[in-house]
Length: 150
Image (tube, rainbow, N blue to C red; front, side, top):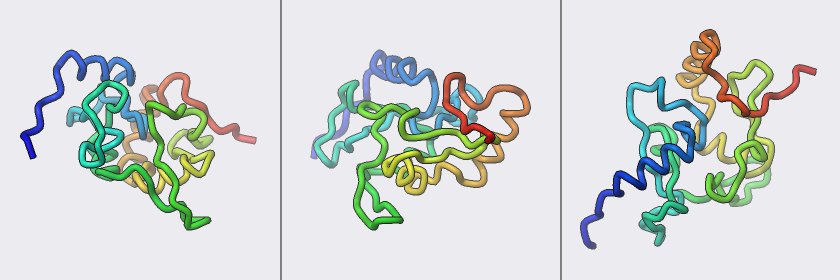
């Protein structure tokens, strides 16, 4: 297997800008993190994915590590294998909403629900970060849908 070439800086910059510097899965802001986000292959290279812009997403370390080489996961309710959220094909707001307190990502669809579980989008550490960011007005990201309090 040939050595993998680094993704060109110009493409990396495009991925960051297209994602608005947010993890395309959990919507954490790269600006406030200690570790730079990674360029993630939506369809892994091991599954014939490519380094092209339409197969790349910006991901925080935790989402990238949890997703790994997966493109599907088992939906707990039905036991069916469903695709994970694909930032190039799926609209975040169609699959996810913030809880009324703005701390938890709620999956609206089977893809959203399965992705929340598979990528641990509501792990304790990230909820604490969201709570702290909320107090200083930098969470949730502008334009993200929020569950009504009714």
